[in-house]
Amino acid sequence: MGKTVREIAETFGVSAENLVKEKQRVRDEIKRQNIKTKKVGNKFVVSDADVESVVAALKKKSVKESSKKKEDSEELLRLINSLKEENSELRSKNEELSERLIRITSKKNEEIRRLNSKIEKYADDFKEFNDKQLQLNNQQQQLQAKILEQTTQLKDTQQKFLDSAEKSSELKDKVDKIENASLWQRITKKFD
Image 1 (tube, rainbow, N blue to C red):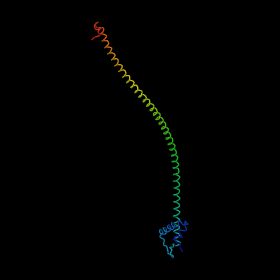
Image 2: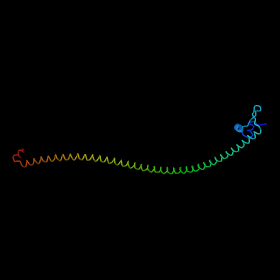
Image 3: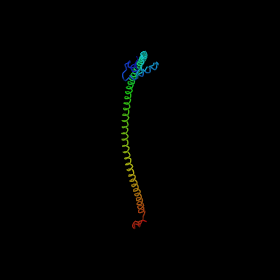
Image 4: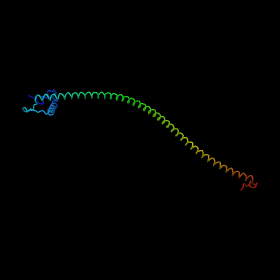
């Protein structure tokens, strides 16, 4: 009698979800083999001899496809295993690099702490030096003020000395005049 495309597709035991796909495969194979269909009622039917030819061709293709799928899945498994190994190597390298980075960072942080400590010491030394410099400046200003004061006093004393010397000279002149004066000048006290 013959079978419809749907009946042929159902012989492969596919799920209802994949039935449409399988029917399309059956139609494609019918076209590829140039098989003529007959219309019985409102359905197209393929003769039993042609059904066997279509089923055999599709089974052969299914075997090839499953073989190909198996090869592909084996290749994918090999690739997955290779990627797992590579991932494992990368992970160990990453851990090694992380540890190395931690060691380097730790050394750098220690160096930074050491340098900061030196900077703080230098800052303290500089502050101490600056304080001493201010003290020295103050002492220098005080000494300069004392020197200025003593210079002023020295000038005053020098002026007094000059004034005293002048008076002394005047007195000496008077004494000389008195000593050299005549008796009459002495009595009258007119020495000029």
